[in-house]
Image (tube, rainbow over all chains, first blue to last red):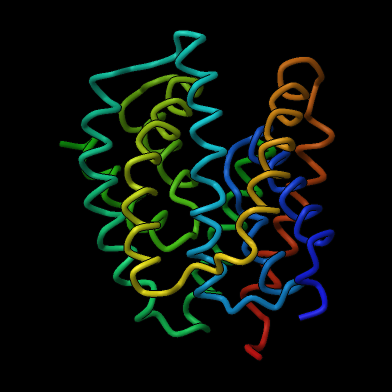
Length: 117
Length: 116
């Protein structure tokens, strides 16, 4: 648990924030918490959402203020995302750790490729 | 209807803390022919209520490590603003390539790592 120090967490949060502001997503938060701070996988995934939520509110504010908004599509997508989030949140605890890591690894690689194309 | 389906798929992945935006943004761009920047806005806005619900459920399941939230959120907010400034003012392509390489390696590590 030695990396649970405030300094390590502050650095992890800072880097995750930069990546989030640069290209969105807090994908690096989860492995940082799991492999550096020794947080258990499922808890790291759940905690990452709680960290990314306030960052997303700030980013959204910047987008809306710049007039980049599509209310109609956003509402339709949100109906789906709330439904999906309910399913996903209930599902997380049921996923064995090896499946969770493989699924997450695949999504990280997709995110990595998306970042450069 | 396509909008709702994209939302459900991204919500499931996002609700598990895996990163719903990874499928939501390309889904919107390619299936709905909406431009990238607007897709990013839709991604961010639709994530807020979905994430709030997810946090509520994960908290009920005692899955949130509350002791580490404050330092992560405070420094994360500072980083987010700096990241946004870099994205607007500089050409972040080198930084993006670096992070991309890092993500790629971490992705492989997640897939092949042994649980402890």
